[in-house]
Each structure stands twice: as structure tokens, then as C-alpha cells.
Length: 113
Length: 115
Image (cartoon, rainbow over all chains, first blue to last red; front, side, top):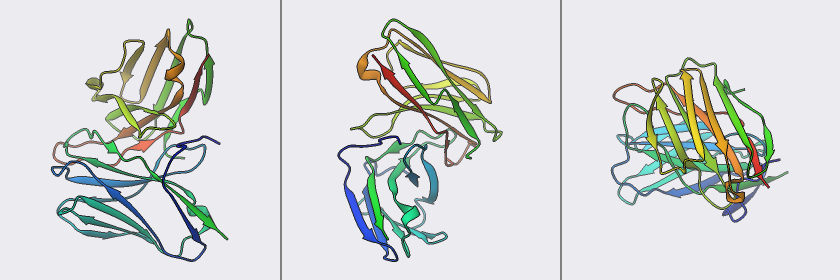
């Protein structure tokens, strides 16, 4: 498969645990944030997004929290499964219209059965 | 799977070769992007096309030349590349509207190796 990073922070969890992946973003003016998941050999896949007028958004098994005061974003995955093993990226943008996303370095999530 | 396809999936080329990467999106989107993903760096935006017009060129060397003939197709023409250009090249598309940004859908990428 493709290698997406050799020196990524890694989070190792057991199947069934809840996972929390954190991201510090850089631009206080950013108004839209996305979490992507990238599995080996694939491009990034959209997981969930949040706009700056919200501080929490929930999806299926995932929750994103936004703290604009400290420019911090987190992704919570409930009941983590082996299929969740991947690299997770946060991205931010402040443009309207076409979006120029700025990506973080990523965190590798390893889920053991 | 995502509606964005890229060919070839793998490419090995010498520094004097000329090759092209192709991206096609089947989502009816109006914006397309090229990114470079290296092993030790975050995803780097290279080019953005909105409504078939190039709107961003992030200081990319001229040995990379994009082309967007219509809203569904995007090419990246490569010539006289350097070994440090070896990376995963990702294409993405989005449906952008005037007031809000929206998520981008990525293709699987082309793994490029320059020898």
C-alpha cells in the first residue's frame, strides 16, 4: 500500500475503545474545518465537517469538537473498529467559493482486535 | 468509489521523460485540484481550477503544467522532473458555491517515482 507518512503521531487503541484524535489549526480566521481519513493505497475520504459558528457536530460514530479560543479541533470515534485504522487529517479553510484547504500532518490510528 | 478517478495509478519516469497524469470526476463538480503528498510533509496544494479557470498556483515549478479542458477533466503534464518530485499526486474536486466552502472528494492518487 501507499505510505502516507513516516513520522506521524500514532494512536494505538483496542477494538471497542473510544478514540480521540486532536488537531491544532493555524489560522484564527478559518471558518470551515474537515476531517479526512486516508487508508493505505487510497486518497483521503471525507468523514465529517464543521463550520466556525458551531462547536460540536455529530455523525455516525464520529463527533467533531471545535474550540476556536485555542484553535483546536478534535475527532472522537466511538467503539473503534479495526476498519478505522488509517491516517486522519484535519483541514481548515477560510475561503468561500473554491476551497483552498490547509491540511495538518495527520495522525495514524492503529486499532488492534 | 469517490467519483474521482486517476490514471495511471503508478508511474516511473526518468528525469528527461515527459508524461501526463489524468484525473476525471463524475460528480458534476465545478472545481478541481492537484495536491502533492510526500512522506514527510502535509498535503500540499499545487493548483486549483474553478469553472475551468486556474485560480491558484502555489509557487509550483514550471516543470509541472496543469490543464483543465473541461469541468470533468484535469491533467498534470510533467517534464524534466527531479528525484525529489517523487510523491503521491492526488486530484480532488468540489462543488463550490459563492458563500460557503465544501468538502473535496479525492481520487486514489498516482504514485510517481522519478529515477
